[in-house]
Image (cartoon, rainbow, N blue to C red; front, side, top):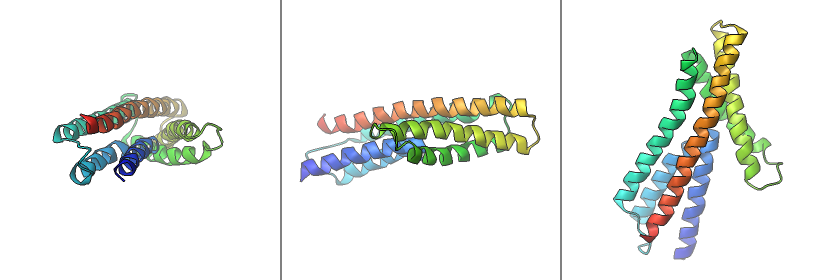
Length: 177
């Protein structure tokens, strides 16, 4: 039974990591799951408060990377608050659509990951473009800002995924130290 619980713990860690692709707070769910595991999990496996603190620090770093590359990059190119907001909304919608549209790619899980990442970035582009046109910016300016939103979302999500994968490894290894 203990091995089954540990396997479920690992499956949930990976599932929460994947949620980062569609703009949901997967890294923070990894922290919550690890905290619950520490408090209520089997005694054979033990996560410490130090591990929880490390996971919180990593989750905060992941958010900083994602925010820094997407919204700040968009604003630096002259984007408006409306464009940045619609960029975030578009990226969530695009990430969900991409997870579904990526299913036909014949490599399990990889298709949805690629689809989510690409379509979340595309959604950020479309959202930023709509936001910038809404306030009256020209097409070239809107495209320039939207391209920054696309690249910011792409690299921000990649950075957050790298941090999230590190969190998954830390949460698993911490059970054996």
